[in-house]
Image (tube, rainbow, N blue to C red; front, top):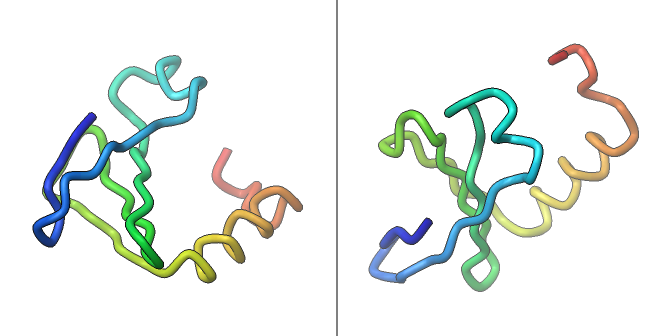
Length: 70
């Protein structure tokens, strides 16, 4: 999926497993020092953060710190 954010054309990707839940996934794109997340079912919802913060979040996810979601 491609979107323009802050004037930059970005290519968003999603997890391979996200197709299992229909249109319930997040798309992610990197842009310089930033990472952007967009909801598949509501593209008006965009979260932008730094690569450092996103890396810290991914580390916690890999360690199971957010397993309450499932």
